[in-house]
Image (cartoon, rainbow, N blue to C red; front, side):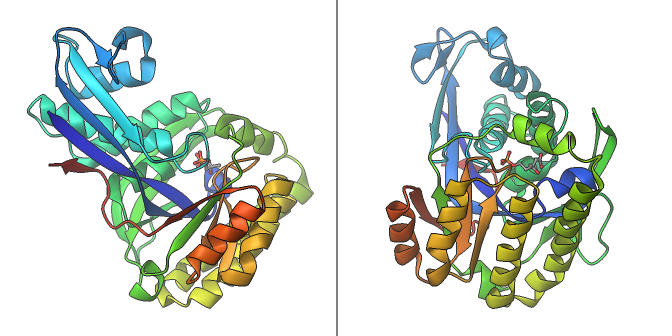
Amino acid sequence: MWCADAPAKAILFGEHAVLYGAPAIAIAIDLRASVSVKKSTNWLLNGNEFNPLINPHLGHLISEFGTMQSPLSISIDSGIPIAAGLGSSAALSVASGMALSSFSGSLASIESLARAAHRAEASAQGGRASPTDTSVSALGGAVIVNSSRIETLEHRWSIDLESPDGSKHWDVHSLSLPKSLSSIPVVIGFTGNSSSTKEMVEIVANQMHQSAFRASMNEVSELSRQAIELLSQGDPVAIGEAMLQCHHLLKEIGVSSSHLDNLVEAVLPFSFGAKLTGAGGGGCIIALSNEPLSCAEAIRKSGGIPYVTSFAENGVQIMP
Ligand code: PMV
């Protein structure tokens, strides 16, 4: 049997703005999805019969990284909440690609796994998908995705995409976080409401022609640019303040919800800062906190589902 796992991601700064030229800063977190593959007499997914030809996402990965010739039994086990803004489908895509390619005897590179997973995300999001989720799940650590190269960072690869808003180009970089930040527990608060990234990015795209809306989006972008420097300095208080500021700006552009706002409010007394993470509408908040259990309790009291987790150094990897 061949098994691989990959981490979820949380965006610290720059969601939505990354589709309009700004940097997105995201970290891998230790909620993981694993995929295992073994020979079988018929096609099975988690023990049930399935047809890879009518499951476009998985079917595409099987033909790209494995073979349709002989049937497989594929098992998926994920600790990442679905449609919650934590990149569960990206984690499953890169883990599937790695398990399938190692089974077929030619292990795919991290870069090719990230590229294939991004193509699948982009088609699921109507052509409006940055490579943020897929790059973080593939690489682990902290990742900065920007419309041009940032010379002070380690460049990993470039990605181009034809989207409904024109041609897009992104450069993917790794950032090594100071220990003062990477050792802080990460608390996620899930509203319990799923959110459609495709719908949220459409709502934003339809308002980008309004100048007041664009001005708020420019502020999200500017904050994200400044946050790159803050992250390398490693002061959690400054990062926390910037996260809260980012939440207020995302609220201004209409991608928050009262439940997300309440969860942010609830964890503030116990954390350096908090904000919604991902596309918004529903989904999750993220808080950096040295009192993770108090944050978790506050999230529960506000009707949310807490996940106390940590920064994940490892991206997609083969499991023993
Ligand atoms: O909610 P998620 O995990 O799909 O994150 C979406 C982040 C956006 O910037 C809104 C879209 C994107 O593709 O980057």
